[in-house]
Length: 193
View 1 (cartoon, one colour):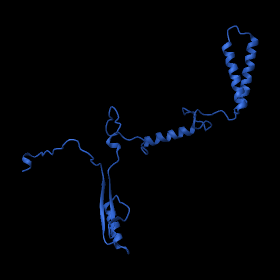
View 2 (spheres, rainbow, N blue to C red; view 1 turned 90 degrees about the horizontal axis):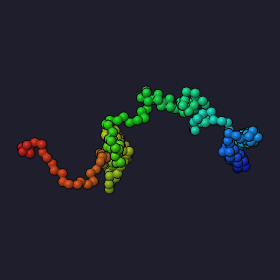
View 3 (tube, one colour; view 1 turned 45 degrees about the vertical axis):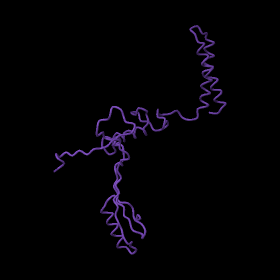
View 4 (cartoon, one colour; view 1 turned 180 degrees about the vertical axis):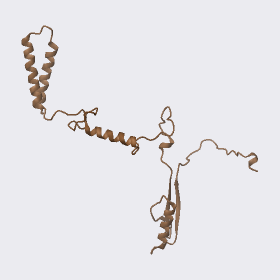
């Protein structure tokens, strides 16, 4: 819709609004015929300014998409997506919600719960001695046996280093600060004597 069409349509609709406010029970027929002509003029302006087809669905994403009469928004594309989600939920092929292991707290913590934090990671780092320091010589592995096999293959290679080592890296939560003094309490009487 260009600016001229927009201006003309706005003027025609404002005129119709004024006619609607002026209507009473004893409005003469001549005035009703004038209102009828103004309504037709506004409809003609609307027909000129509308360039696309009327939407077939109530879906804002696919207004002219295929129609499914059983869908609440009449959109076949969105209803197919919803059916696939329901089907996978029933079959258990793609769980979209995390199963609740514990009942939720009455109010969520702003800092999260332990289950939301990353799990500790364990890695095995193959390193070689380059004459001055230890350096990483391969990709960190998740499996110790795999890392040992990698080092064994490196030792048999044509350009083997003087020495190799396997470093166990375990990333977990680190205690940064302690308030108070923790006291060790022995559960055995007499200090396990």
